Image (tube, rainbow over all chains, first blue to last red; front, top):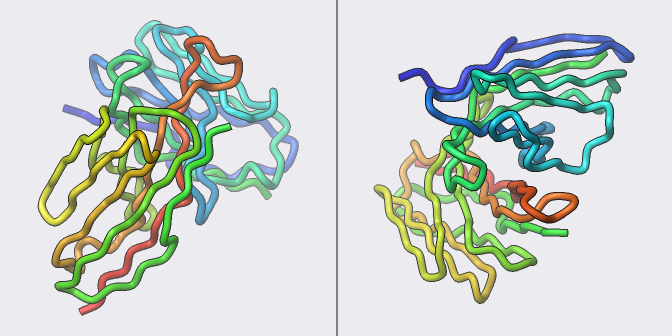
Length: 113
Length: 116
């Protein structure tokens, strides 16, 4: 079975631009979470979605938004990119929103110049 | 706000030796997770600890949870080079707004290097 997939793998943007990152969860998983991992730090929680509804939000500005589709895939959108948004963006899926175990995708490496 | 602290942050050890990584957290939670991350890679789930006193073992790694002390440990027995990686603990808590909102808070990670 396929694991969590994310696209694109790498992305280079300039300040002020917009970016959309995509995630497909493991088949049968209904919850998707997004994390930002800056080099040398632990992942920081951004959003969690379950059954297309937002179930959790981290301390990120409104420039960050997300949504989940009927097939449980998800998009993370970031507007007005800043240099500090450069990071590895990780998507994780789980069976439901309070599931004990989250399975992480390979991540999208975003570089903002 | 929940704080998760790991120590040590850097650990260099010899093959064959034993050591323990500690994970302390600041608010009540009965769910704690350990992950492994290899350089440039994503996170691999190692252990899910869902109750006080939970102990799980896989190979040379053993994790335990003491919810009263708000402490989890990851014990490494007879380390081998293949265990070299960054290890994260993570604790779940209510996100902004409380209610049913949920988030996972990670520690800063422990970079483990096992030398021959």
